[in-house]
Amino acid sequence: MKKPRVVLADDHRMVAEGLRGILEPYFEVAAVVSDGRDLLAAAKALDPDVIVLDISMPSLNGIEAAFQLRAANSRARVVFLTMHGEVMYAARALEAGASGYVLKHSAPSELVTAVQEALKGRTYITPQVSAELLGSYRHGAPAGAKALGGLTSRQREVLQLVAEGNSAKEIASVLRISRRTAEFHKARLMEALGVETTAELIQYAIRTGVTAV
Image (tube, rainbow, N blue to C red; front, side, top):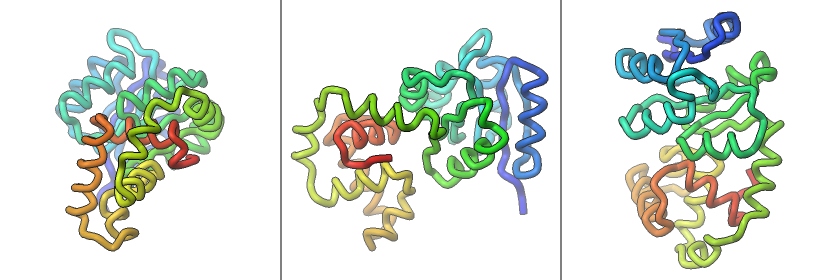
């Protein structure tokens, strides 16, 4: 069975080699690069399934690289592995389309899980950050509450399932509808809320109390 392909981006050579050792039993590490611009080139050339990247990198930081990957319609899932435990970085990473956020000191126990969850279309946030991240959204102004009330019951169901990390196929199974119908509901939901990404849906769901994850 072919291993999922991963590109790793970290500007510290020794750290990168250590991370390669963690990942290689489970994934094909197709390339290791040291800055965001090289990452963009590697992503285009190698078409990886997942990109594991640091935030702090020379030339182009990881978050800006993630935004550019999204703008280029890269299919790769993005998992951040960083020293930054502050909520503002995690929130920005989600905004950039991240499927995972792991702190470097937790890499041995969490990185493989985060990549596996990303491959399933789910979002993994390290526990050291997730509680505070949730709190920050909960204490924000509930600007979306009115919009939430305007959603249909089915849209609210889909919103919660999306926020909990379920793929369209899984949503279809839970709601006993076709995958195409699930995707249609998600598209209408995003249109109703004025959002463009799954990460924004997750942020909205947490902020409005639709989900507690």
